Each structure stands twice: as structure tokens, then as C-alpha cells.
Length: 334
Image 1 (cartoon, rainbow, N blue to C red):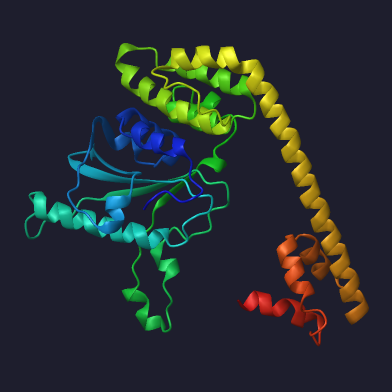
Image 2 (image 1 turned 90 degrees about the horizontal axis):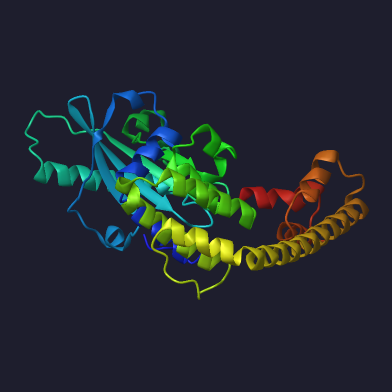
């Protein structure tokens, strides 16, 4: 799947990050945390190059497939990274398709003979969008069943959703060695001081010689994050976290001032939007009261908590509606 229009250039850096086994291990140990985690031999963790291609998969930039030994057997990990501002409601169907293609590839190229079992696959969706994820995590919840007898023909396949917004604020303190936790924390930093502090933590964590490739990947990702966050295309390509640390120290005052200005402007815009919503809600409630009499508390709360667009749509129905419920019921039927 290509990046959506809401994605940003630094998103592509995630692909580079998850080409490192340390990141995959951190994802499993810190965020997926299955009860059988101790049965995995992370020294065997390796990328798996599948040969299947479809038009959809050929365009995807953010899938990676790994495998790790679980006892004597392989467990395959199918990792998808979603950067859309809203979720993919039909993700479970996509997961089922990708897993089917992966199994076909394994049957063709691995020594799987008649009577042998296919290996287990753990599909993981890492979501970094800004809105709630609403898509069902099991394909069975997407399939209509007009008759109970058809239930046994409905597929039953789930994926593991890791929503970055659900990660505890103090995660990095609980898991100080988890690189992925610090990286996600960087993305949610509220101030330049906090961002600088997290960069220093990552520097200390990735200081060993064997961590240099991952440190470079983190620096590349950070470079894209900073360009987007501060709309500064003049930031040079950074090769390591020492360079990131030095640049943050140099620009800290300027960027802090910019962040504050943007925060004030955002607050003003949100305040104006909230005022418009409250005004629209109050007006609709007055119209409803004049047209239908006393308004019950449930309806009042429904209007007061609705977005402006919804309130305006209800307002268009007030004059033609015969009853109060006519104003709202058509909305719930859509």
C-alpha cells in the first residue's frame, strides 16, 4: 500500500529502523508481550525474503517479514506499519490476503511435503496515526452471517494491533533498554527540551560499536522527523546521534520559540473551533425546543458533543421533521 496523503517523509525511516533485529525484538518484548515470549530464541531472529508479488505488495514500502525459532520450529512475524491519519477499517482482510500469499510462497520454496504443517505467522500492525483505530482485528467481525449454519465457513484470523498512542507516557522509564520506546517517545515529544533529553538517552543506549548501524538508522529517521516538525528543509543529512545532539543544542532556543508560537496559534484555532461548535449546538437546541418542546437530557448531550458538521446536518432537517426523533434517526441508519 502506498503512503496516504496524510503520511510524512520521515515515515519511510521506519522501514530502515525495522530492518534491524534489535527493533523487532524490542517491539515483541516491550509492546506485543506474548505470554510465550520466553520461548523465543532471539539469537535466531532473521529477515525472511518472500518472493511473492502483487500490485498491492509491490507498492508497499512498510512491510517486513522476519522469522525466529520457537523451540525447534520457526515462527514467522509479518510486520505492517501504518502511518495514515485514520485507520484501515478492512485491515483484517488485507492481513488474511498477505498471510495466504506468504503461505503459498512457503509451500513453493520451503521443504513442505504432504502431511507437514504450515508454520505459525504472527501478524503485527504498528499504527502511528492520530485518530482512534476502529477496524476489527479479526476478519470474522467483517463477515456478515445471514444464517447460523454459515458460521463454520467464516474465517477466523486476528492480527496484533500496536497503537502508539496507547503506549504509557512513562514507558521509557519502565523499559529503559527498549530503543523503540524511546523512538516512539521522541515522536510524541511536547517540547524541544524533552526531545533533546530523549536523544541523549538514545545516544547512551546505542553507544556500543555493534549498535552503530542502528544508531545511524535512528539518526536518519530523526533527520526526517525534525525537517517535518520544524518545517526546516535546510537541516543537513545527519549520520549519527552525536550530530543530532549537537544540532539540537545549537537550534534549541530558536526551535523552542517556534514551538511556543505554533502552540499558541493552535490553541487559538482550537478555541475558535470550540466556540463555533458551542454556538451551533446552542442554536440547534433552541430551534428544537421551539419546534418540539422540551428536549430530553440524552438529546441535549448528543447535540452538545457533536461536531459542527453533524450539528449543521441535523439543523437542515428541523423544519421538515415531524417529530424530534426524525431529526436524528436518519443519521443512525446510514
